[in-house]
Image 1 (cartoon, rainbow over the protein chains, first blue to last red):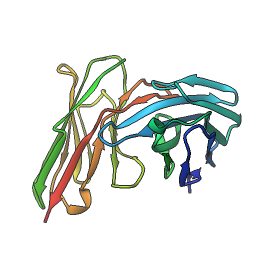
Image 2 (image 1 turned 60 degrees about the vertical axis):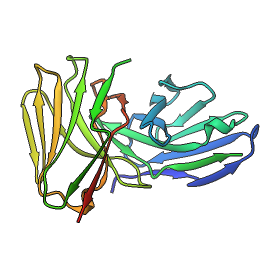
Image 3 (image 1 turned 90 degrees about the vertical axis):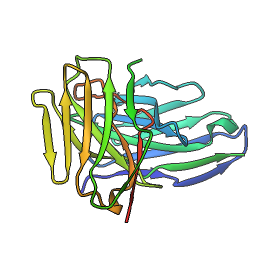
Image 4 (image 1 turned 180 degrees about the horizontal axis):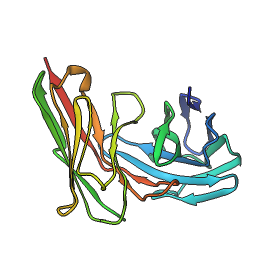
Length: 110
Length: 113
């Protein structure tokens, strides 16, 4: 059963703290993504990774960085989180055009 | 940045009616048009997709109609059920196996019983 996992599912941080969101997939997909979703704004692409250490900015990369050291694992890092980064973050992986989404991480930055 | 426009922003139909969701795009070069749906507090998932070699794709109660000349797609949901209540997205797809999807705001469908 193809699966994308995300940890943690819920996270509360204070402004200025560092945040690490983890994503894993068991499908050996080369391409992985990080999105954020805010009410009424759909999904916005933060970063895309084409394979290990092959990452590219998406549409809203400012304030974020990523790390992909293994094909099955893709991390999103917020250095010094800001309150406007409060959002739901989705990770996805793809093969042949279809994207498979993880369950999401609900991040609150106070 | 490529634009995808969806209409209406929200739609309410009664159980058993046909819901019609619309999508228009600018770029005519890409070759894969997926529709995703997202239930409240869940993640998006692929519902149905079409390639421009055909102008219609059917999967049960869900049908995509594709008009290449007008750069428009529509998703028809026949015999709508309350369980179809979700937000529907037709993201712009950059094509290829490493597809970049650009999502619009979607159409929020409510099916009342």
